[in-house]
Image (cartoon, rainbow, N blue to C red; front, top):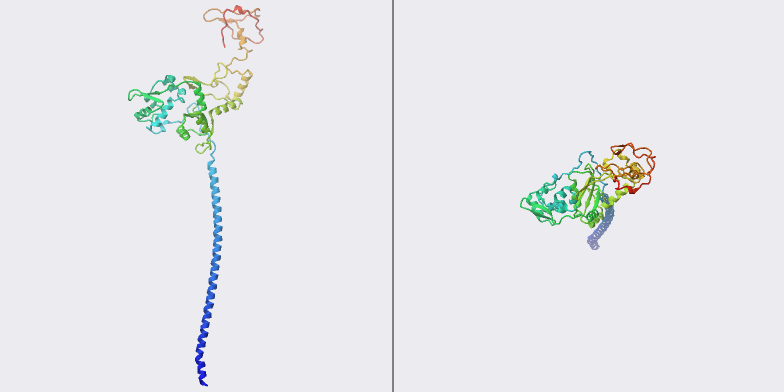
Length: 432
């Protein structure tokens, strides 16, 4: 009976070992499952985290885009604001009476020997745009006579003193297409290759080629040169003239003459319109400007201004008052602000100015003078008197053969009768 028990005991370790192996396997499976579960949770958490990050990134991108859009809109608005020019520059400098207010100073220009700059300046002095209105140049050249002028004389002009050395000036002028140089070395002369030709057609062409531009502000010593540089960006010009008052006060506007009417129209048509130092400009043709001012004067909204004496083709001219013998607006006395009243009074008198003949029925009228007795001539020859068919009621007093001052042909005097015109051997002297 003991043998089976030993077999059973011998077999028990095998059962325990098998049971231990199964338990180990089960534990490993449990660990694997736990590991798998943990891995799944980790992956799920990572996935959720990535989803949140993606959502956050998307939100951030949207915000970034909104910020960029806002910044872009701000930049556009700023550019639009920057592109809009500031208001017109106005003159604010104080006007000094009885002295020159001109601040132009050619000495600020640097010394140069640039051939093109030299030719341009000399050709301007002799050119059609300057010569007929430049009294000094017209006098020394004789206008159409085209007399030669010493080069050294022109070099003494304010804007030409900077052209050095003298030899560079001569060399530059020899290459000019409109001027010619002659004379011995060191004493050269210059004149136009083609003499100036006077004519109204040329004056009309210069008007059509010119524009009016306002908005350059107060004058400085370099204003003339600054404005010249400004217009140089839009092509060549013949002349730029700063407009001034009688006291040489710069008005802040200029007349610019272009080489042709087409060039002037091209400047007027520029879009966007030119600006000066960030400020807008008033731009129109010179003819339109003149028409505008004349219309304002006609409507009584603008008082006609006195004009500078103008030199043109050998003649000095200035504004004169209306009517024959008008003294001109500068010689008038009294309140200059009462110009409207003077104009109305002139219109009531038939449109004649203060220097006119006056009312035809007044004491200065032509009809009264026609009936005055003939005066004694200076050569002691008595002119025939026109006799009336009816003797005057009162004898006319005379002194030294002249009509008495107190007898001015007052109203109420009987009208003159018909006269025998055959009795007049010679016509009466005209006094009007």
